[in-house]
Image 1 (cartoon, protein in one colour):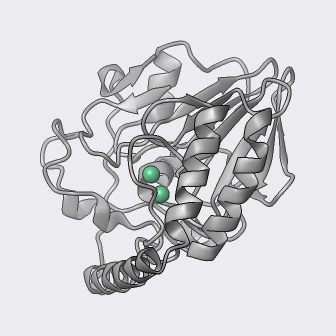
Image 2 (image 1 turned 135 degrees about the horizontal axis):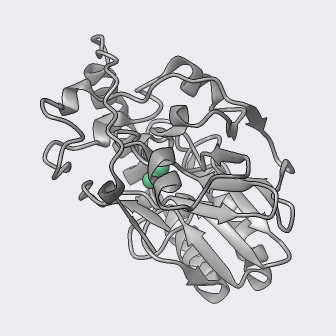
Length: 269
Ligand SMILES: [Zn+2]
Ligand SMILES: [Zn+2]
């Protein structure tokens, strides 16, 4: 698990490195304002084997660093947003001022930030398999939080990487512009059915949890999301967030490159 040390926000995403015998896989890539591949190489965590990255979904806190990897994958429904560097779909407005406690370089400004466009090496759909030699991770298409959210399931190790579809301690987000509440409920039903086959979940935010907790969190969401009150809340929040995002992104955002490779910019455990 890797986290961006100088990004202090509830949006700070977990970055996962899965080391295989023939290939390493980086699951989610953070903001992309520090250079993740350099950090991984300097720490001896990658190198000597091919490495690929995969985004659990398109949001900036997970996809911002994709362009730093020669080979990366994202679900087919969100590939175009990365090709275009679409800062509406990547919801960069939720990157708040004051959340960067040590800028990547002098003069760095939040207004310069955008998710950079890049061409995916692989476009994912349900059933795609990442073969790392001694372990295989199967892609589950889990729409709801975003249309192209994916989970990665290692059936042999009983491990699930869940992205933002389900995590513990924070409320699940079902109201951003491209969220779909009924798809999210179906996804949670699917994960609840899967929970007995999962020993540990590595989520997009907060700490790992077990299959029992996965059963509880998905059940809780299904119950809450099925109420009229919650449906109304979601509609209102989705309208508001869409309006704000559209207003914010009506102007051109400069696409400045702001890299700084620094070993202390990430925490690794
Ligand atoms: Zn997200
Ligand atoms: Zn997130």
